Image: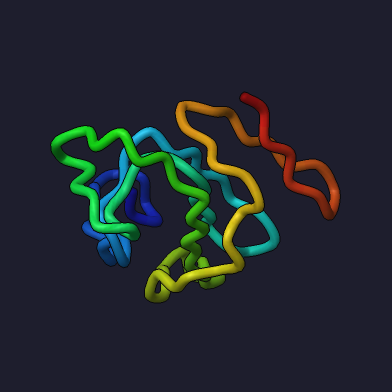
Length: 95
C-alpha cells in the first residue's frame, strides 16, 4: 500500500516462490519463515509436499519503501501453515 494509503504498489518479488509460510514485520524488516517453496527443487505453485525452514526478509525503509529480499538464517524446524508473532526482541512461531 502506498504511503497515502490510496494505491497498491508492487514490491520486490521473493527470492523463491513460496506458499503457506508466515510473514511479520520485526525490527524494521519484513520476514517470511517456513511454508512450502522451491528452495529444495519443489514448485510452490503446484503445492509440493516439501515443507521448508526457509527465512527470507527485506528491510522496510523509513519512507515506507522496501529493499530487496535476502535469505536469513534458516529456521531450525520445518513448518507450514503456522502462525508467527513478535514481542519485544523475540519472534514466536506456533504450529
